[in-house]
Image (cartoon, rainbow, N blue to C red; front, side, top):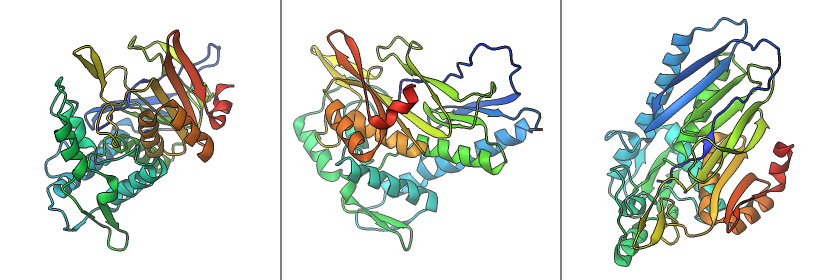
Length: 334
């Protein structure tokens, strides 16, 4: 589905003479990407291998529930289920699907976990990148089966069903959910100062090793890799960024973005280069960043103002990039 890009994770610690507090750093691979965790523990004893084992176990559980890379995951079992049949699922998978539906309704369908087959048709799927442009008839056929409205959720029995032969791909929200789960795990273990990152999605709690708010950088959206456009200080929030400038192809003089609109079934064609969202949960920030990236700068900013969402947009212009942001994002720029 829609990949998330353009966040550089950085402590960007200020230059001062104070001795930094001790911090444990963990990293690994998950969900087709990587994770990085920093736990500030100071003089508090911490068992790094034990924390690593808990982290990997939690991520393995999430993958077994929501991965499209694992053939017998709960999600893949559902994708093989014929339309009209019901499947009982874990409370965790049900929660993510419910959260996905809420974001879909909020954004008028700009976020849709059934868009995966269309992403595959354009050559941006899990099977590898291919430069191909599907026919309009193929797009129409895939759109006929897609649509979040065709997913049915039974809250009482925690069962899910589908009205059409649709396929669900949670890659635009599962990484954020994984971040939230790891943050909850660390809180359960008694740690309140940490940074968790999975594939660019972030949760930042408490203070960094210098005893200051965590600082992250919004990357320059021009493919320069590692060039910061704007740095912000943040604590006790989640951050996600979505953009399309690294994953695209050009054919017959036309540029095709990896970000596929669930409404048209085609790559987005507006001038929004990246969108950064700050929210209480990484799953929410993840899904909203994807949706607003589909909506474009005008509609995305209007939604953010209406709903009180903290978003920061970088819009392509003839002279470079223009920053636009919602009122709720303004405090993070000070």
